Image (cartoon, rainbow, N blue to C red):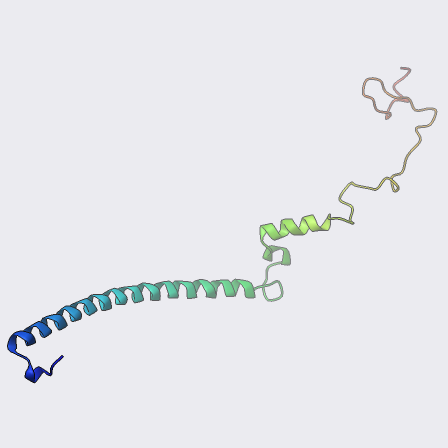
Length: 128
């Protein structure tokens, strides 16, 4: 490209027109980027607030809060904890191994109640 002093008036007008087009494109890009930057700053502030709330919740425990320990657990973790107590190797409520069961011999005086099938109260129910 020759120096501007060596160019004719028509050539200079073409160069100025091209530069004006480039400047217009750059102005549009700058405006779009400014809008994107504003949106990203808003999202960033919202995420920073959310992070601060979550860090506050995580920092709370029964040692530095007036809440009891079970209230600090989520509902799902309480459920998991309850299940783990009655997990393998531990007896659940009402369960017992066959070796630990106490078998009571009904004895000669106890009769089976035909109507209910139970042995309780059969001795006083009369002959069946």
